[in-house]
Image (cartoon, rainbow, N blue to C red; front, side, top):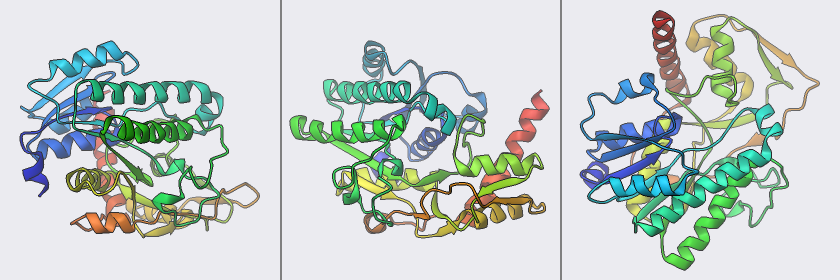
Length: 332
């Protein structure tokens, strides 16, 4: 169904050269869509994965500039069928701790601009990329879609999580007032090729991979028994596109039932790199929730594919990392 549904459609992807956004661009091009990729700056190492791409258009703009965004949408002819909003101001724990107001303000305004421009230009479908971070630590595990901020308020100063909640609230009232079709996927921990391996990003998989690649010890707080679930970026995209095609749910948890301890994750990555396990436990440090998983029953009802196993996905990501890092080192 997917290829037939998207062939010939025109889709705008914000953050299209970023981690998850680039996977949307790649998949939509494969399905025969015309894609307008909104970005803040060129990333040649990402663009090469899309070439040759006769149906790709690059739009460099600041999503905080509503007039610029509206003009860009008008320039995409003859129409825009969907916007996928992946762009976000994000960072590691230290950045989020120091800049909660900046993060909240920027992400709220970007979400408002995207939804307003979609309404003004009568764009039928809008995807606002959500996050499992919007679930409170008080919510049950696995968390269902109904266990969100309306049932378990989130007592936090995490500007990123608050912005995701604001986005969902705004999406709700836009559906009610304007009849818009707005979809909010809520993925768990996402990983895969083209992830951001910069030190300013806090996702656990790239952080561990960087340390292993540099031959450094992996420091794990607690005894490593705390468990999480991870989902490949490619599966996030495929599930989200199915979500839009079928139009059964406005919100959707995206993840797997493959729960893994942080210690086991570190060992999987060490094995994928083919090196020794250099893992050091720090038992007297805080570990957060012992388990944090999502109920993916709705997702299971929608998808027509088997999600990538964690081991296969990590091995693929390590192969991509080695090729990419080698090219970067050679280019220097």
